[in-house]
Length: 264
Image (cartoon, rainbow, N blue to C red; front, side, top):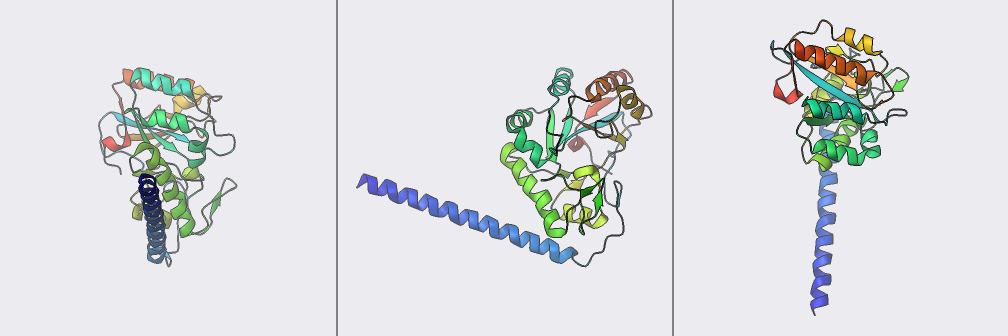
């Protein structure tokens, strides 16, 4: 009799799990349909890094800088600069980390460790690291999301992936290549994500020399959002950004996470 009740309990649990999964799937499809219906007749007129709706600075004149670190996971971009992260930890420099779905899959244990550190805020860099388009626009030879449905997947599937690890919902989104059309930005906003660009291009996709990185930060003012990569340990990014951090700290600047300020 005891075995029967155990068996019955397991069956009920399995049925409940299947039901929850079905409901979740149904809700997701309804969400996609709602967003598609809302924006299906919107024809984009802008394309680039700073289209309407992209936030590029913090709403403050204080001497603070939001350091954002990207990790795409695309071919050649699955590495991890552990020495750069160790330096940020040692110096207690907070940062916002934008992680792509493919990078997460290749570095799952690292992501869990990063998520457990209150210095770092984990945010959304897209499920497949695609430029954000509602009509298949491309850049740098990379195809953007083909339509609204694919864009919703690009944002929401990665948001779900990150939430399962961090137990927190992502609130910021930066697309692959940081390119958008203005309708894609509205779609992201409908999915409760602020779209984050940058005011300081720190390392140009890990291609700058250390000197060039220093030059990129030469004229910063309060409230900057800076972007660098931390998935290319072979690059000069670590050397350059360490020099920058030391110099800016001497000048009285502090580093913050995006969530510490409203964005503009």
